[in-house]
Structure formats: C-alpha cells, structure tokens
Image 1 (cartoon, rainbow over the protein chains, first blue to last red):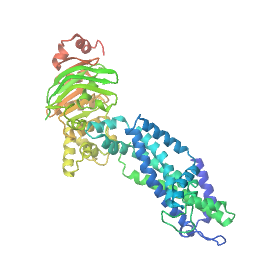
Image 2: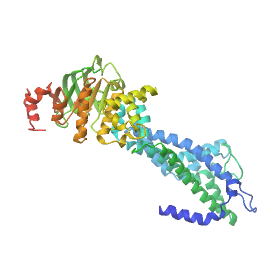
Image 3: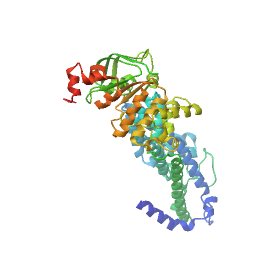
Image 4: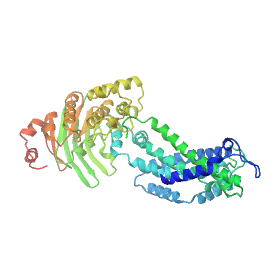
Length: 258
Length: 252
C-alpha cells in the first residue's frame, strides 16, 4: 500500500499541474511548439492492450485449464508449466527483440500488431499460472458433485470448476493486464511509436509508456512536464480499468457466495 | 420408480490396494439398504462402484458386474448415463458455491442441455419439496447462493439436486455424519419418505441410524461383505460372530 501511495502522491505533485484537456484531445506538437497532448498515445495503448489481451488471456486461460484439469501429472503439463515459468522470467526487452525478429523483420515494418503480440505473450504466463492455481483451489467435492449428476467431464470443467474459480481467474487476468500496460521495452522494437494518429494494426502506433520514455529522455522542460502528466494518466487509467472489471464482475455475485 | 441392484463378484482396487473383494448381493427396489462397518472397510468404495464414480480416480480399477434393473452398468452403458440414473449424496454437503439455490437444483438438467424454463421451474419446486427444503428457501431461490445455507440445509439442497435429474437409485455416503442431531433427524425423515419412490443405499457409521431407516443392512469388514440380511436380524440375531462383535461394540 505504502509504495503505491508514495508513487501516486509524487506523480500528482509532478504531473497534476500539466494535466489539461489538451493532453487527452491533442496529439504531440513538433519540438519548439508549446502544448500538445497524448491523445494518440492513450488510444494506441488501448489498442495494443486490446490486442495483447485478445491473444494472452484466451491462451493463458486455456493453458491453465489444461494444467489443472486435463494434464495433471503428464509430461506435456510439466513441460508447459516449466515453459510458462521461464517465460515469466524473460526480460521484457528480450521479448521485444524476439517479436521484432519473428514478426517485424519478416513484415518489413513496425506495427501495432507486433506490439500487441509482444504484450500478449508477456501476459500468458501470469494468466496461465494463476488460472491453474485458482482451479486447483476448487475443492474436489465440487468436481465430484458435477460428475455424479451425469455431467460429462469437459462440461463439468467449463461450467462448474472454471465458474467456481472465475473471480480468481479474473484477478489473474487483471494482474497480467496491469503489468503489461506499463511495459515500454517490448514496444520499442515492435509498436515503435508514432507522432500522429494511427489506428491500423499494420502501422507503427503510439503508446503511453513509449511516449513517456521519449519525452522523459528529451532535453525539453515542456516535454518533461508532459512525461509526468502522461505517467499520472497511465497509472490512473490502469486503476480505472482494474476497478471497472472488478465492479462489473462483482455485480453478479450472490448473497453468501464464497 | 426405483429398481433393484444386483451385484455379482465385484472387486475393486485403488492402485495395488484390493479394497473390495468378491462382493455379491441383491439390493431390493424401493427400500432403504444400510451399509455399516468400520472405517476403511470398503463401503464407500462399494457405493462409488454403483454409479461408476470409483473409476474417476485414475489409479482405480474394478471387475465384476453390477446390474441396475436390467442394465449391466459396466457392459452396456457409459458412465454419464449411469450417473443420471443413480444419484449420489456425499458425506460433506457440496453445493456449487457460485450458483444460486435454484441453479444448484437445476444444475444436473441445465448442464445436460435442458433449458425449458417452465419445466425447470416445476422440477426445482418439486425437488425442493421432496427434500423438505422448499418452505425454508422459496423466497430466495435466485437471490441466495447455495453456500449461504446452513450445513443441514445444504445437505438437503444436495439431495434436491440429486432428485432433480429423476434417478432410480439414490446413493448416500454418510449423508448425516457432518450434521448436528436436528439436521440428522430431518435427513432420516427424508430417507423414510423417499424410499417409496427410490431405491436408497445409505452408508453410515451410525448403527442406530441404520436401524432407524433401513429394512436391509449389510456389514462390511476389510473389503468383504460379512453379512447381509434384514436390519432386524442383523441387529438382534446376527449369524456371523464378527457382525455380532461389531454391533455390540467390541471393535470398530
């Protein structure tokens, strides 16, 4: 709690004074001109995270379901679990280079798609392992109850076990999401950044962390202020996204459900 | 309506552990049959062989034949079909924690693709009435989770859930052992009412309970069935010395 509060207060102290409407509506201005915003970077981050989630969450959840329910004790499961753990430890800059050589080089240009893939791959291990752990926490009695009703195993897994573990699985997805939302390194070689508007998946695209990185390294005070404001916006957006998902998923919960 | 169960030369293993040896018995239709015996004697394994839940454990194995009505369950049918005809209630109440009371009862039907709302409503109401829970929960069917009920209510909910798929046989594996005396007596009353419609097999540690609810009783010891007879005979004049020792509390 304390570190989050400390970071938050410092960001507000440094960034709040530069927050204005232009930050959310305008794109960056050329060097020397005052003002400009990060609208394209905010939109770009949303697109990148959307692509990343579409890739990372389904693969991660399927992997976790396999590990916990179907592959228990098999060699394949052990191999997948090991791979996920190693993947989790791969530095994000390495992930960027890997995706660069796998997608950007063959395509011949930077693209939003490749950035999304890099983020998606980084989400997989977290989603996969939390899904597995949450499923293993579902008591065996619940599985037996479903099987004893004559429900086929696959159906019992999808409709009963996964459903019982869903609050934990969603939390795992949000963790992975929040973690990659601020990633800069994997995007340097993939999404690359873009000073203007772009919403196409096969073109370079701006992203908040990239923009903050570029601005923070620049020699201009004006850009430094924008970098602080951008950092504040990034954190607030992550908090909002996580809270929104939590709120939406908690609405359906029944009285007394554990 | 219930049907009889005919068990012939049933053997079961967990890994190399031979947990059931040469079990032969006929369980009569529309009666309650109690299985008693010390812990680890194989009575739970036995009931799990009747609905093919035994084999859900990867190291488990079974041989012999079990006929339910005219169906040889190990030769003629798939496990899921058997389990729809043979309901089971477990030792610890195990409602689906994220489902409402209504969804818990309807789960067996819904998960097998049944979706006619009007019919489901009817079945849920009938099942909850049959398990003597309806009056206590009818106002919160969709609002409350199955896990929010008390232990005794949860167990009756599990009975309702088993009844909703309209089984012919109801297996109960120590259904009252985790419950207080009041809840236990409610479950026993329920067994009394239900046995006119279903064939009930109840595993119990509690000999008074067996004497109260069952017409027939089987005594298991070390994976074998020592004696199977009318409950009255087992408790007053058993023909086997070991049964007598167990009944009179000399061991177990």
